[in-house]
Structures are given as C-alpha cells and as structure tokens.
Image (cartoon, rainbow, N blue to C red; front, side):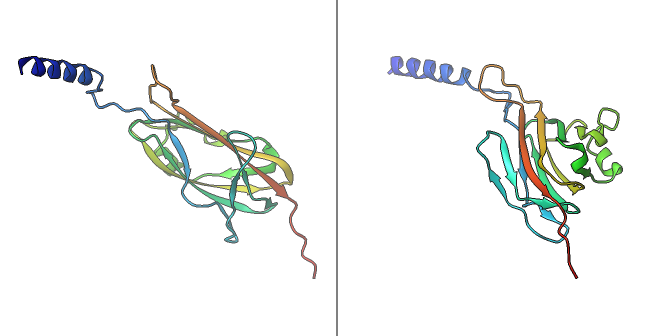
Length: 180
C-alpha cells in the first residue's frame, strides 16, 4: 500500500510539473468578419476562398461603391500589439476610418499612422471591434486589401504564431452607365 502511494505521488509530481501554474496561455490572434461586408446600397458581398493560401475573394464592386466592413480583432488571453490594413493599388480606393478621437481611445496616436493603415494598440486590449469603409475610386482587377494582426503571445517551444495575416482580393468594375 505504501509503495502504491509513493508511486502515485511520484506520478502526480511528474504530471503537475508539466502544468503552467502561472495560468499564461498563448493563442494565435484572429481577425474575424462580424458580418458580411455590404455596400452603401445595402448589397451584401460574399467572401470565398481562393486557390492561394491566405487569399480570399470578395464579390466584385463598382467604382463609386463604398463597402462597410465590421471586424473583430481578438488576441484571446493575450494583448493586441498592432494591426495593419493596406491596399495594393493606391489609386483604386480609399479607406475611411472612424473619427480620430475614437481611434485614439484604442490606439497610440504617436506610434500609429492612420493614413497609412498602421495601428499600434494602447496597452491592455485583447479584443476590439474595428469598423471601416472602403470607397472604390477606379476600376482594377488587382485590388487586394491586406490585413495583419500582431499580439504579444510567446510561442517559444511550441507551434504557433503571434501574427495572423490574410488578403482579400476584389475586382473593381467601372460604374454602371444608366441610360435614360
């Protein structure tokens, strides 16, 4: 009986030394669409997977369309560090972000460059709602919106990443001509 107790105690010690008693957990951050993007006319745009890894296809839009996006940026138990939102064709459209006062309540004004799509979080945020608009200005088949989110997760000896990225490709068609 004493042998079994010692053996059981030894096994418990071995198992518990593998536990993370500090309670730290690391997760790869996530960028989530909280709703399908939609245009100023209320048209919902679908998002599909593509043959390329990390590239998704958004339904085509027209010059003059403004697309509304609602993102959830989530680091789970970790803290958000930075978020980047860029476009590949500068002349194809413009990002329209919330008012600067709203952005400054979540992001560091001195370290961020809102006009360039660079957002550096103030400390202590692990999840944020991020709405924005994209206004299409010129026709192109090559417009790609690039999203990147960084957290403070540490993956030293295990598989994982503190960065998540993806691309959203959308063709922008010429504005429809209305004949009278």
